Length: 191
Image 1 (cartoon, rainbow, N blue to C red):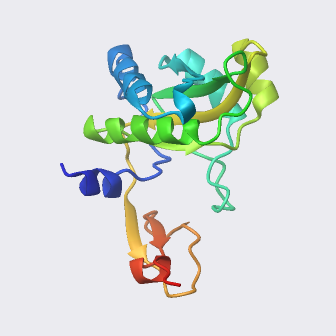
Image 2: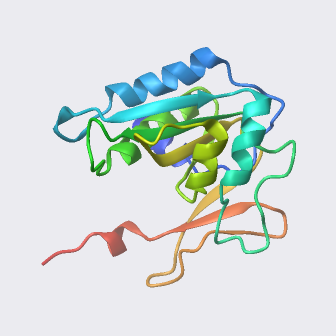
């Protein structure tokens, strides 16, 4: 699969076949992709929590906010929830500012997930204090992102947005998830 194909297939999936588990070895391999990714000044201040057992997954789920643009949807129903999570943490003993490091790491994880036939979603809307308490995460770690992972069961369609038009994602009557993207000509500027 080309890089372009990986990127196009790497969508924000929010509904999964929860019965299809993810082996710890695959989760570790995904974190290794993040380990090899670029970081500012090569400080490597990120740490990763791997969670892929149903009991722990059930503890994480209530502390995440899913798809804010879908106003009448509270997130995936039981049976459609992620089979695993990778929580990206910033180690404050190594850095105070994590820049875009966690975004780069999450993108690497998600690209690797697609290559493995999985999908996922970066979640930044997190009830951080509750998640910290639930998982006993020490205060030296900032909770930066949660990457939800699993075998996608939803169809996600990219489409060109009208020039200057809305780019809010939505679901149609058939529950197909539509993601409008600005056209290339609208993105490239010349001065």
